[in-house]
Length: 203
Image 1 (tube, rainbow, N blue to C red):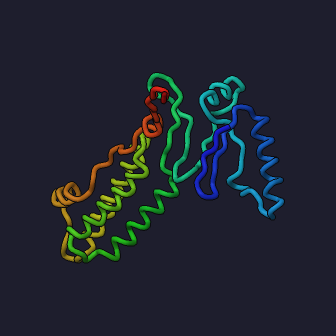
Image 2 (cartoon, rainbow, N blue to C red):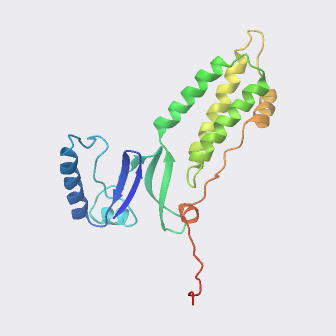
Image 3 (cartoon, one colour):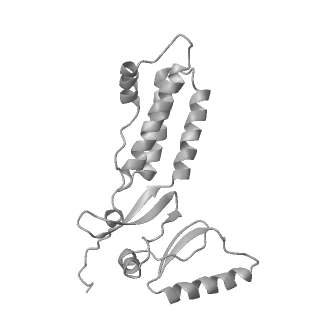
């Protein structure tokens, strides 16, 4: 049994389906004693993990389902050499919400000096990358940067009816202030690797 928890959200993994069903039933009964209920939309049993894809294929079933947790959609993937890879991709709804927030703030800051806008946008992107720039998620963070880049240009173009921001000029501005999209988080096997050094017994 594996448990991953954050606040009141958690994911529990089991090797056998029967254990998962018993846990769900016991948990439902436990919650009921405190007049609580499991969230109907979030609580579900899915086949997931190292052998899920192969087992489902042998039974004539489609690819394993995905699940959302802590801002990521979790997917059963494979590495180039065919090994199992737990891929984490930014939830699309989260990305749309971030872009909407940036667009609103750009409208509010439209007449700020370009360097001040640039520093603010850089901090927004760095904060996003520090959380979402995990291995396998480069396409999503690159797409967000591209959208932020486009939104900023549109905002600058609207600052004046007479001013039109040429791409050549804007490209230099964006390159100066917007950090590149790159993976900054290590693989979990590296992030959570722990090694201990043996000690001689105390005499």
